[in-house]
Image (cartoon, rainbow, N blue to C red; front, side):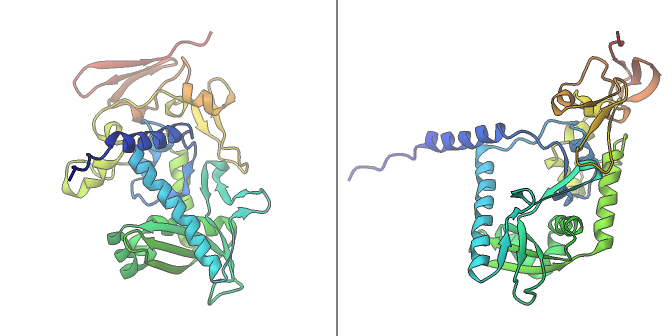
Length: 320
């Protein structure tokens, strides 16, 4: 009997590369996402918000896993509709996915839908949130409920309910290992939502990096630091990326609009996303993004004493 050929690895790699290429064309998130509040670390959120480090890069296999989660969401919605739950996936006012925002448009989130005719509460509108879980995570969810086992998902729903003026959420989770489905109705808690908005406001308006969650990223308690994309900037002395969001002249405008505006105080104008990414010759780093102690400053330069004893001058080109 002829031997079977070895698996063709280059075909799977080609599939993964396709997912990576698609992701590369989607662009980077420019706002603080309501789905990111599962982390306790304000500093990590602030670094990401300020674009202080490169965006986290996922390989093709991981991106395909994310795509599987999105497809499962559509399947769960079909399952709910099959039992009579009515779901609006699109905001009738915009014709697009339900979206919520606040703090001048800098805090944003996207809902899976609005559900009505839910058993036990057929007349109540619910924010719909669909998630997939590995077996261990799913068992924790069954045991403790979403608030304790998945505080980030709980926070996300609280923010969605707050901004949509809805007082219930329907959390639907599927176990990726055996296809078990878990559902839980979640009540709106105004105090929780307002605390989350206050936290987001502090992060958005902060000009200094918040305190570190752990001083020693190698300690057992700080295992989350090892997976954080801000590790190099936060703990290893790396200089932040060069862009308008890391510059001391630029400020996020928090007003009643939905424009997510950034304003340059030096040039006295608002900045497009392309301009924010590019920066300009007058860029000066926010001092807390420099891994040294500020010892001098003038209009176009800031001088720092670095940990190794050397002096570094952050110098801008004078305006002409």
